Image 1 (tube, one colour):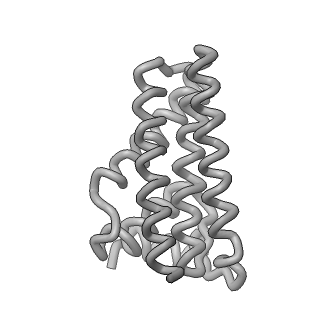
Image 2 (cartoon, helix red, strand yellow; image 1 turned 120 degrees about the vertical axis):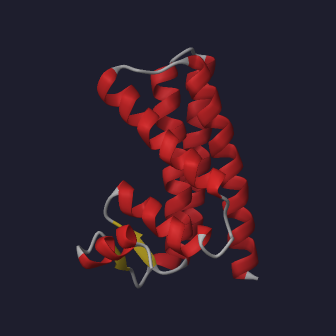
Length: 145
C-alpha cells in the first residue's frame, strides 16, 4: 500500500463518504464548467484565471472518481494519493494523468500565490483537463453499466 495514502486514511484526510456516489455526475459537470470557464479566460487573455480554472476542472474530475468509490478527500494532496492507489495502481489511469494533475496543482499554486502564469501554461492545462475529463467519463460509464 502507498505510504501517503495510508497516512491520508490515518489522519482522516481521506474518508468513506456514504452518499458519495450521488455526487459523481455533479462533479463531472463542475469539471466541465470549470474547463469552459478556463477556455473563456484564455480567450480573454486572463492566463492566471485560465490556469486556476483548468486545475479546478481536473480537481473536480478527480473528485468524481473518488466519489465513484465511496470516498471523499479533505485536501488536494490526498486526492492525488487516492487516485494513485485506486486508479493508477490498477491500470485504469496512466502515470501521465497523475503527472498532469500534479503539474496542474503546482501551476495553480504558482498562479494563485506567486503571480507565475503564462498563456502556454494555461493552454497546456486546458488540454490536460479535457483529456482527464474524457478518461474519467469512460471510467464512470464502464462502472455504471
